[in-house]
Length: 250
Ligand code: 6GU
Image (cartoon, rainbow, N blue to C red; front, side, top):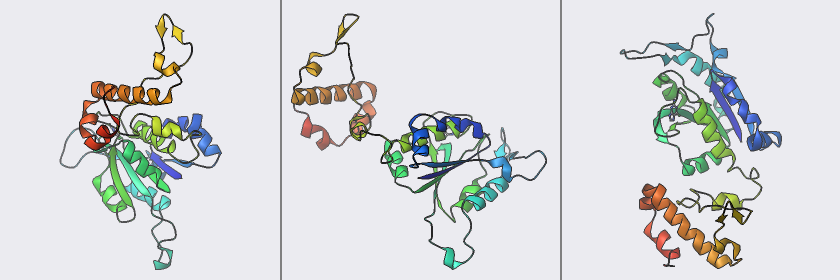
């Protein structure tokens, strides 16, 4: 997968060198380019913002640097012969005004060959940037959750981490991806490791029983209890048949 990130704060993306994302880059599963939006400005102050039309607080990102950046990353076809050689990238614009990011969206992004993230700062980006980009690529406005950040950079780190761990080969044991919270619409059961007794607290007996049938049933029940306690909204969205099929009373 190829990922391009446009930002006025490239330093935010230093952590992409670390851990499993860094490893995915070294092994060639992931190719990342981080670009300073200001390199597409031409004035001495490298201006990227201006006051909002219609009034209101703060500043808005001017369209010109974004337009030039997209022209550089996704060249406008010179003629009909160029059309369709590379699939158009998916442009993701992180904004609290977008659709809320979730695991299903992470899976859909992980299926793309090429992503571009356009990180806004200040109050946001001139809307014409998104309209014009949509003539050349699919555009999605995506929020990392229902709260407000200073800018899209940290949201992009969140989304990339969720997406990259779904790329085939990034996580050694693929079972990790099916057992975890949100894989099946429920939260994961609690986890334990050695020692069997710690500060007087025992690991639940069932987990040490070696009885895989009992363990699976216990985990399923814990998963339902935890989801009901922490995220009742997830339980009410779950399809009734997916619950009933497995969940005989214990
Ligand atoms: Cl993607 N951007 C900003 N600025 N704030 C956010 C967000 C994104 N997602 C949640 N809050």
